[in-house]
Image (cartoon, rainbow, N blue to C red; front, side, top):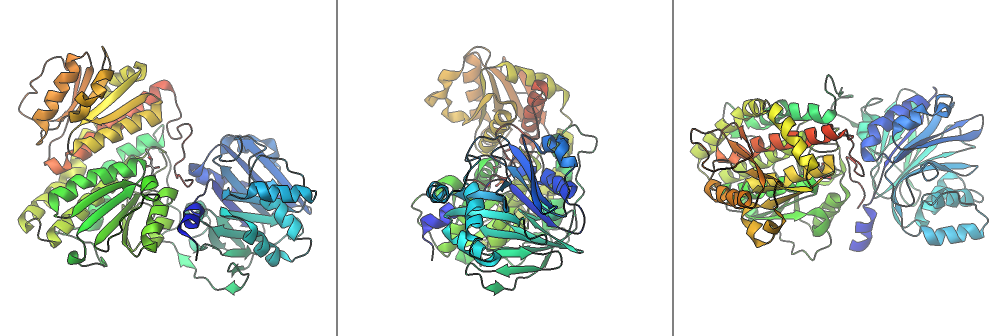
Length: 619
Ligand code: F6R
């Protein structure tokens, strides 16, 4: 049994890997799969194939595009190969540190971190092995090479894996084995795919979907030997095991930018449809109910809920706290996964632990889930990718049904997550008789109108384009809200900073006078979210306090017959009107657009902001 510390260390990962063993040349297909895996990291990329009894390796710094432009890739031959996209942890993001890493006999791609690499390297250098890169991965290459001197393939892999501390998903090819790829997993996700006279290895099913919908996931400690016509699986002791082949729901989802300049723009505009899909999946219109089938626990078995996520998903959790407190009598806690996993938690049997994640692969969120599972807790995942590790390992799954999200900055997945969390809070409220059936039905009625209101709110375009310049030019900006609008203020600030690289801070409007008011100076842009809800008057007072100190206030409120009574508001945007619970959905829209247009004006890479990755599979 691994200790808690070891388990935590094991769930670290980076980058994306792919392997193909076929009768046809593989480099072009590997390149295409790497483009799909780019969301996992885009510091550098590389491919290794076997041809004429030799390992060929081509690597480039930067995006997969750079690798594609490399004339050596165009010429790469070989019907068996591995590829990698990197998000650097050990060593600079350059072409030397890019994967694959190879000796004369072995080539390896790796996701994860080898914690005892320094010791292993010392041992291997002592044996005469020469290292080329600064990576921890290279020790794996030389360790296998060393072990192959005395062992067959399976035993050399078994022996190597036992020497490694840390986390890994590996793809390995061998100079003398023209029909064999080895895959191995500990802590980092890895899947095998099956095709006609060819088989595959990939970090996730998304990378494999264009080739197959038949998948087997490796569990921790397992490794596999992939031949063209069959795949064998082994446990960590090298004993053969049988594994199930799963059929994924659909073959590849067609997802491209269409007429949009960026995926993010498309994903923002898609929100009415994705919300509609989510609503259709869960709401039973004929019975005025929310269908959450096979929920494994009775309502009296739960007296509190703890919501856990990272980044935007954490903001979804914060948002849900307000709804759970409003609509249910449960105690509600919200936690950032990277904090939760290392705290001394008081696990309680009557708590429902909800893990929110678009990708379902976020390392910290997975580690928090794992911790809850080890302590026998009730776990529920709210995820977009239903084949993901978090979905597979949770006690219950609520998919958000918003389709592939490519833009690194989460938009439609955020609305998808808060939609599901809202419906969950409503349903639990009804189960526990915390809200009346009549109130429940009225709220469902409003919810069904939401996609149309989001569609209308999306039309407030021109004004935001103009306003965005001011945010770019300022030293920094603030986003303020109270109550339901506070998590949305945090989300708006996060979007702006991650896309346009300007400092933006989300704050509870009522907290300004306890410190941050000192930041306000003449001309500083401040977004104030003040919808006509219970907090409206209080927020307007806070707004006046910042205006009085020279702030340029962009007020975002909802349409109303009553004028906003305040002087010197710089700009005002009015979203559509609906009940108080649902206003956060509408307030989010102008903030997403503000961030988008700011980054567009600056000419930044909107779908892939610097230093970030779509799936944060590293701790
Ligand atoms: C911000 C953003 C990130 C993610 C976070 C968690 O726009 O997208 O903050 O929300 O990295 O990712 P998931 O939801 O995949 O667990």
